[in-house]
Each structure stands twice: as C-alpha cells, then as structure tokens.
Image (cartoon, rainbow, N blue to C red; front, side):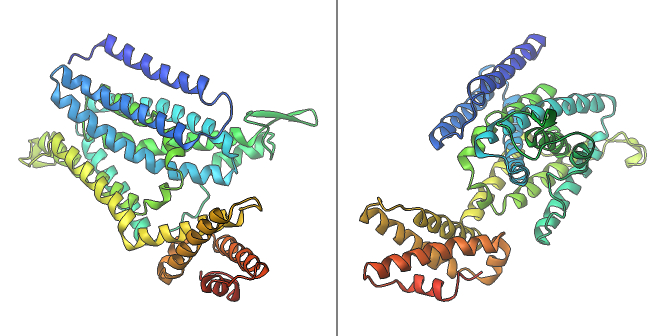
Length: 420
C-alpha cells in the first residue's frame, strides 16, 4: 500500500471529523452517558479502528497490517491505564459527573496533538540517528522497572496527581474560583473574571498527557518505524476512549494486575528495541561499529506476545484471589448502598432481592483476608459507614415488622461496622 501525501490528508481529515463529531454531538450538552450509549459508541470506534487495519490487508500489505494492529493494541492498553490517572485527577478536582465527558474529550484532543508532535520528532531523530533505539529501549526498560517496583512495594503516590507544580503556580498567580460554573472555563465573581476548576483540571490532564507520551511513543516505535502507522495506531487508540471510560467505569480498578501486564509489555518492547539496535549497530564502541549477530523479534511474534500478556493479565485480575477479594469488597459496598436507597414504594420482592445480594456480598467481604482488606480498601471509614448504615436500616425494618434479623446484619451492627 502506497502511503503518500493524499493518504495522510484523507486520514487526518477523518480523525479531525471524528473529533468534531464528538464535540458537536456528544459533549456540547453536558450529560452522563448511559451504559447503552457508551457501549454503542465504544463498539463503533473500535470497529472503525479494526476496519482501518483491514485496508492494509485489502492492498496486500500484510506487514503494515500486523504492525498497525500491534501498535493499536499496545497503545489502547496504555490508554486504558491512563484512565486510572484521569480518574484520580477528576476526583481530586471533584468534577461533576455530567462534565467529565468534556474533560476527557479535551484530554484526548490534547493527547493527540502532543503525541503527534512526539511522533514527528521521533521520526526525525530516527532518520538522523538510527542508534537512538538504544535510548528508546533503555527508557522503556527503566519505565517498566519503575512501574513494577511501585506495584511490588505498594508505593503510594506521594503527591496528588492534580496538585502538580504548574497547577499550583497557576492558582497562585492567576485569579481562580473554587466553584464550578457549569462547564465554563471562566466565570465572574463580584465583577471579577476568574478561572474555574474546569480549566485547571483540563490543564492538569493536558500536562499529564505529555508525560504519558514519553512511554507511549517509544513503545510503538519499537513495533514499527513507519510514522504513518505510528500516527494512525496512536490516533485510533485514543478515539472512543471517552466512551470506554463510562462503559468500564467501576471495572477499571478491578484490573488489579494491569500494571504488571503493561510492565511486561513495555519491557518486552524495550528488549526488542535493543536487539534491533544491536542488529543495525553503528556505535564504534560496540563490536567495533559493526552489526551484532543477534536474533531479532518479528512483528507478528510481538503481536502474539502483546495479546497473550493482556489476556493473562485480565484473567488473573478477575479470577485471582486478589481479584476476587476486590470484587467481594466492591460488591458489598455497592449492594449495601443500593439497599439503603430503597424507598417506601419498593415492592417486597425488590426488597427481598436487594437483601439477598447485600447479605451474599457482605459475607464474602467479611471472609476476605486481612492482607487484602488492608491493600484494597482505600477509604475505610466511608466503606464501613455505607455497609453499617445499610444493615442498621435492615435491622430496624425487620424489628418493626416483627421479622427475624439475619445473623450477618446483627453481627455488623453489634460490631459497629464490617471488618476493616
């Protein structure tokens, strides 16, 4: 398949059109997408990305097709990991749910712009100095090692993701409001024009996007050196990320081993880059400037490794003891909250089903080992209050109706809360 100026123009036009469509038809009116809406549009964007890869097969360009899919899957996985940080940022700024779409779309747009700049810079550097792959490979190995170390030592981030230096600096020198004014970036208070938290959260996400590009771009250049494939794989991995956020919101933190999987992928690509650099070596202090006879990793093998690692990561996250413990704790909190929100108009059947679910998952949560409880419950006071309130309500209702109080509810109330 010939990639010429016209190919670039058409591709960029399609991506800009998709972004404009999102801005005009999806986020212009603030709302929280339903699961159905998020699922439909996530499927559409993933479908567009997959069909785009088939175009290479249509032209008989199997190599570029495999490179594209390898890059797309890797970048999509890294983008999903980025959503964790976006969650932290928006939570720290207390962004109202209905405005989160706009923040995410801005983040995606900024990520596309910043990564395009990195892609062009990377292509220029590779063209001028092919041995830069040594640096790319070492950088990925260091990033993978740092990420793995953080997971193994359970090292909590010492700084709030949203409270970085530039944001604090902006708050100090620029007039800023502490309250939101819809989804506006500026507001007026006492006749003064002030920034809203909406602008600050967008600045914070934009700055974070730049940091993400430092591992994202070297990673994909480890799979393909064609700037067009790098650009399209990166762009399509970002498209639909907003809808995916609302579709898997609540499931994101169940992927407890995602960081391990991404560390393995980044480490693998780092090794692949270094092997490639050795195979095409020009550095005089390595083998006298001659190529080093080492095995290289083909792109189709890379695709299989990446997909395999992600499958193992997801399965381990969902079915490992830690994953099951997290599900139990989350569901105990979720179904207790739902029960406590039942009103007097709820039918006896609805109340019975709500009680069954609350009892089932509360028992499962109480059986979780202390190690996992300490590791997985972030806000113990809040968690305890939600479950305690639900079971106190259940006990009071049962006593008022002259029914027996289940053992699990009596235990929770007697102990003034669940085991944390």
